[in-house]
Image (cartoon, rainbow, N blue to C red; front, top):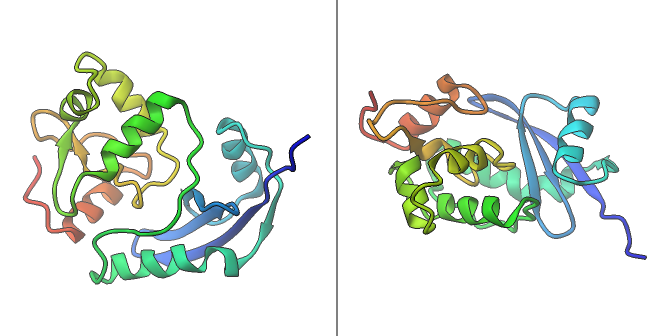
Length: 173
């Protein structure tokens, strides 16, 4: 019988508002737009197939908080923190492709589908992008429509626009 993983949670302030950060012993596993809401956090962890047993602990989330603050201050363009992803093999493949999009650049869902060798899986790529458990750090905000249009974002299109503007992305239609 394996030991149940421990989850550590804290909050940090950002230009997007309060962010809730969840880590395990292995790394960050979830970032949520908004303050800690126990019911919502438990539901999100359950959707990820995880048992929601967590503790408030700023020590375990301090590196993620530090790097997020550096990102928002414009002094960090890449994150180098451990992550602990929970998802299907396809989702993990998409999330890894998202991690390869450079700061200040964008890709379309179609380009991501082609990059992962599944050119007809554009909608599935969109679904995996939508289920990204660690937005900002896994930069799903850098994915736009094939026509260059701003499309949905889990935190809302205004947050996506703020992140792209912060990174100096050229004007998106």
